[in-house]
Length: 126
Image 1 (cartoon, rainbow, N blue to C red):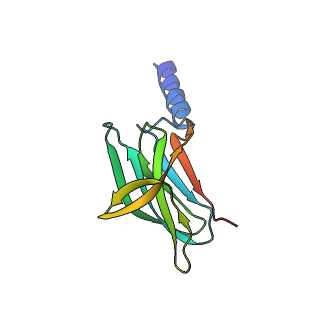
Image 2: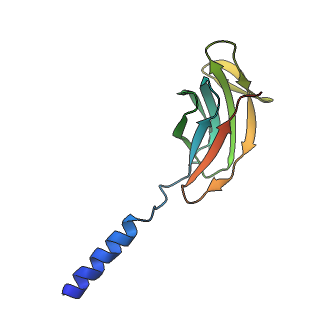
Image 3: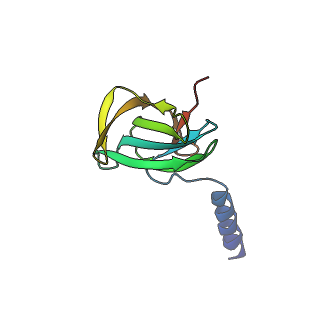
């Protein structure tokens, strides 16, 4: 009996140190720019439908976890810095967000299996 209790405690401790995936991978957006930004993202949701996430704010040099969740590595984004003269991250795919059409850029991201996430890094042009 004591042996079983020790073994169960060992298994619980070993499992606590290991991170289990939390379902579909999340999208983490990292703002490497010295300005705050807002970003909209289009992605394939867990049911296979293309979904657009409205604008989220990310502080200068900050990041936001699980902006979206998808097992598809293709994401489209449109971002703009605030305030002052804006820096824009745009592409050639027209997507409607809150009634306005924005030019989104498509990216195929690499899955970080250990963290169960895709990472999108936005840097300011020099």
